[in-house]
Length: 270
Image 1 (cartoon, rainbow, N blue to C red):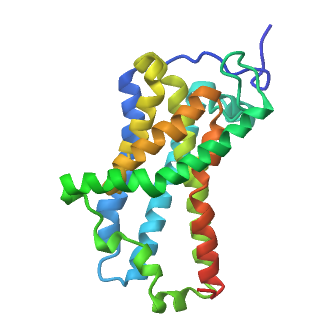
Image 2 (spheres, rainbow, N blue to C red; image 1 turned 30 degrees about the vertical axis):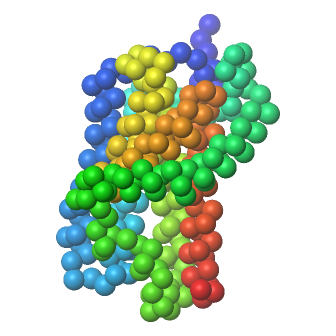
C-alpha cells in the first residue's frame, strides 16, 4: 500500500554526503558574498548613504530569495513535487515532537520562552564579545563604515527623507520573511539539518550551526557570534524537537525591534 505525502511522518532521512552538504552551502554562501562584496560596491558607487544602504538591503534580500529558490529546487529534485504536505514534511515544518516518543506535544512550545530569553541575552552580551575579539584578532574583517545601516538611520536628514516611505518598510518586511523563514531557515534547518547525521553523526546540529554562521561571508565581522547563536538557539532546538518552527520563531525575534523602528521612521515618530 502506498503512502501519500500528507500521510508521511517525520522519520529517518536518506543522508547527504559531506561533499553534497558543502556544495549546497557554497550555493548559498557564494552568491551572498558576491552580492555583498562585488555587486554592492559597484552599484552603490557615488551614491549617498541612504541609497547605498537601500542597495545593500535589496541585494541581501535577492540573495535570501535565492536561498528559498535553492531549497525548492532541492525538495523538488528529491521528492518530485512541491505540494505543501511534501514541503512541510521534508523541511520539518511540523509541531515539536517529544525527543523520547517522537510524538507531537503542545507543551513543548513552552521551550520557546527560555530559548528566546537566552537568545536575546546572547545577542546583547555574548555575540558582541565574540565578534569584538574576532575583529581585534583579524581587524581586516571589521565592518566597512559604508556598510553600516544604523548610523545612516540616525541621521536627521535621512529620517526626514523616510517619512511616508512605505516602500522602505515593505523592503525590510520582505527581507525579514526571507531571512528568518523562507531563506536561511528553509535551507539550513529544513534542507540540510535532516540530512547531515550521515556525515556528522550525533554532532550534526553543531556542524549545522557552524555552517550557518560561517556562511555569513557577506558580513564576516559577525561570524563568531552567528556561529554561537546558530548552534545553541537554532540548530539544537530544531534537531531536538524535529521542528523547524521552533527555530523560525526564535530567529524571527530579531525583527521585533527592527520592524517597529522602521515603522516609526516612516510615520515620522523619530
